[in-house]
Length: 308
Image (tube, rainbow, N blue to C red; front, top):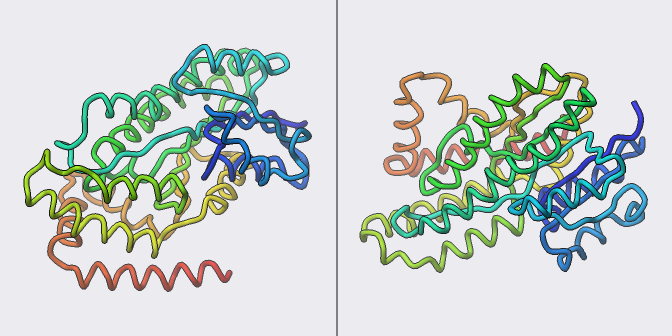
């Protein structure tokens, strides 16, 4: 197989930046990377990460996933409009009590996380069908499998992404197009830090006192502990994304964090949904010592995995 052109979205930071740089530096030079971002003024970190691959195996282009014209202009600028692999990574986050979030903000999140994906796939899918080849790789989340406290809207957007891809994958397969959902757990990025920084300053006057207290005194401290114990780097997620892209038979779903798998496995263990619901409720509200002990064990396992 010759050099494959990979279009990656959301490359100004985090996972998108790491994926684009890793593919561009592939030792076998299997990829020509088109790294895109909404604001080209933020290209500095990517240029630095790309190093010698810049303008060789990696080029940077403007693309706003919320604008069909921007997407079309970017794809039209490519030779033969050819996109062999789409890596849909552009996304935004939202946490907090539902009563404190506006419908306008929720719509904006869906416009990026879900409709951004739909716009991109609509643009590249017909060409992939004609060529009878392609791979659509979507950066989803474990929260597209299992909902999480105070992540109602973000999780809903990822559930939408999962349903969209699972449905589309059947049709795509008929045209020899592969579909993969990459599902990270906690990832330590500037994106995540900003979401939690904003949460610390969030106006909680729209909700009741008890909910505000749970968010500030239970959810936020627990989240910090989870990130400290289970958090991956963008580079770790990028490495696994490359493995998925280069696999002979790419999976429909790939969780990047093996230590998080027991959390998502609970959902499949009980079709009634009671088991994961009761487990998460007890871990958060009833058994603080069990939660901390579990994270301690997982932290030890993380270190062992890292040494291998």
